[in-house]
Image (cartoon, rainbow, N blue to C red; front, top):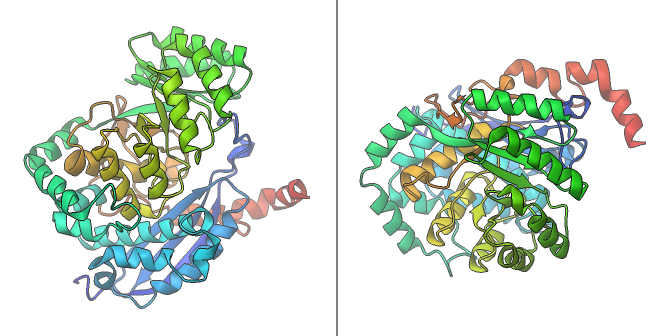
Length: 445
C-alpha cells in the first residue's frame, strides 16, 4: 500500500508511568524521585500499520502532555501519510503554530513536547510503511526531502536551505561504505549507570568492574551534591576505570554561574571529558562564561533546551563544546534534523541524551543519520546509554562492547509492548490499581 493510501483514522493516547522512584535505580542532584514516564501515542490507520510516539516525563505532569497530545491529534486524523510527509515542515508547523494553543509556548514546554511525540509517531509510521529502520530511511532520503522536513524559520540566519542541500549532497559520497561500517562496528556509547546518586561505594566499584568487563570505555558520574563528596566519588570512579578511559560529570542544572565555575574547577583533577548541564539550560551567556573560565574542560548541554533557537544561540555564542540533543523535548525528528545540521556548521559534536523511557531506542537513529548524512564522522561522538526499562520495548536497543548496534526492524524502535502499556497505564493499569494509586494520592496531599 502506498503512502497516499495509508490514512490515519484515530490517535490513542496513554499516560504511562513506571514506578522507578520506588526502585534503587539511582538519581541525580536535582531529579531526586523520578518515576520514569511517558505521554504515549498510537496512530491507528486503515492499513493495519501503527505509528508509535512518546515524550519522556518524570511522573506528575505527564497528564498535561497527554492532554496536549489529545488536542493536537486533531491535525492528524483523516490525513494520509503522503499528505504529511510530502511537506513535513509545513505539517510540523501546523502542530506548533495553532494560533491560540501556541500562546502556552510558543515552541517550548508541554505543548512542544506533545508535538514532538506526535511527530515522532508519524516518522515511526513512515519508516514502517517504507519497511526500513528510521536511521536508514533518513539516510536514503534525497537531500531535497530532508530539507523539506526542516522548518528554517528563526534559524535561516545561520542555516540556509541552499547550504543544507550542499552539505547533504556532499555526504552522499561514500555513504554506502559508512552504512556498512555502522552495521559492522556500531556507534560508540557511554554509560551513566555506574555513577548515580544513592549508590554505595561498594555498588559503584562493582558497577565499574562490570562495565569494564563488558567493554565500556566512557563513563558518567552525577555531581552537584556536597563538594567534598562529589570529588571523593569522582576519585573512586577514576581509581576503578583508570585514566585511559573517559569520565564525564553531570550537574543536572544544579548551580548558578559562579558556583558552576567554582565547582567545575574543583573537579578538574578528575580530567573530565566534559561538564554537563552546569547551570540553567536557558542561560546562554552563562554557559558561554562558564566555558571560557573552565577551559580546557568542555561544556555540554542540550537535553533540556526548548527548541532550535536556543541551540542556535548556544552555538553562536560559543557556549558549548558538546551538543546534547533529546529525541522528544524539541518537536521531534524534524527539529532535531535542523539541530544536527547547525551543530555540524559550527563544528560542535552531537552526543545525544538518552536517559529515560525509550530515549536510547530513539536517539540511536538520529546519531546514525548524523554519521551517515551530516557529520560523516564518529570522532568525539558518543550516545548515552542507561540500562533501564528496555525490556518493555518491542525492539530494545542492542549494546555490545560499549557500542550501539542499530536495529534493522522497520520503524523508530519506539513501540512499547501491549502488556507493558496495559500494566503501567496511569492510573488504571494493573500495577497502579494494585499497588500505588492510594500511595501516590497521599504523597500529593
